Amino acid sequence: MGQEPRKLVDANKRILISVKNAFKCKNYYIIVFFCQKAVEKSLEALIPHEKREFYFSHFLIYFRKIVDISDTFYSFLRELTPQYTTSRSIKVIS
Image (cartoon, rainbow, N blue to C red; front, side, top):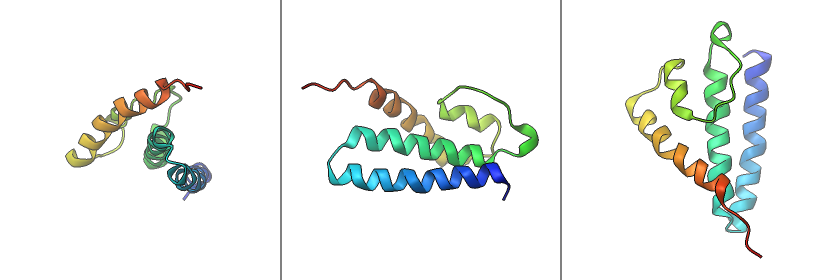
């Protein structure tokens, strides 16, 4: 495993710790946010080095063009992306 994928895996380990803490606090919107980030980082780690390009997209189904993704997982990505968008849009009401 190259340096970049290893960094992405390490980032996912830190995300998992954050998700566990958020779950204890019942902060479910942030869990969706972190879930999307973990999936995104995992998919980035699967991209072969020669196909890597810089992009600023959190649209997970974009990865289907680059990484071989099963239909079942693709359906999951299609469901997760709008939930992630909603989680980013939640305003804290005090």
